[in-house]
Length: 93
Image (cartoon, rainbow, N blue to C red; front, side, top):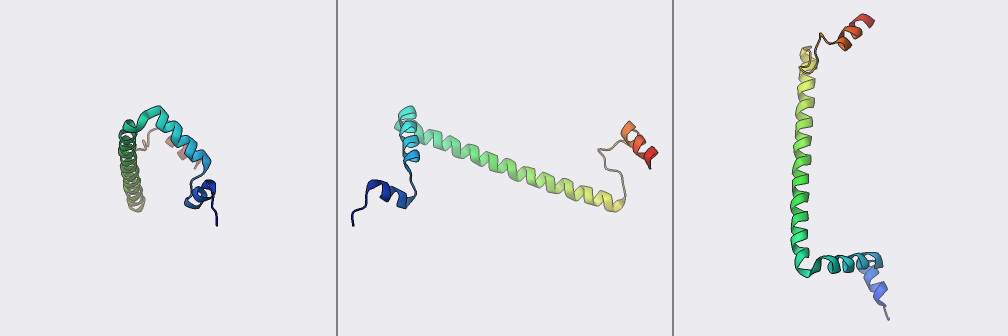
């Protein structure tokens, strides 16, 4: 049972393209810079995740506020009843 290098790498999920990219990455940045780059990438991804969560919370908050305003029958604060668009809608109805 003789397994070649390509077959053994395929077993663990690494293909030739990934190896080439890793070698080029190592040549461009060197062994000492890669941990710093990965650390910065990790921090950036963490900030991105925080931003997504904050956006989701804000959207949920606005959706809940809109639902409450609809239940109360009040006009949402971002709509100006005196605007030309609102007047045209009233004329149409």
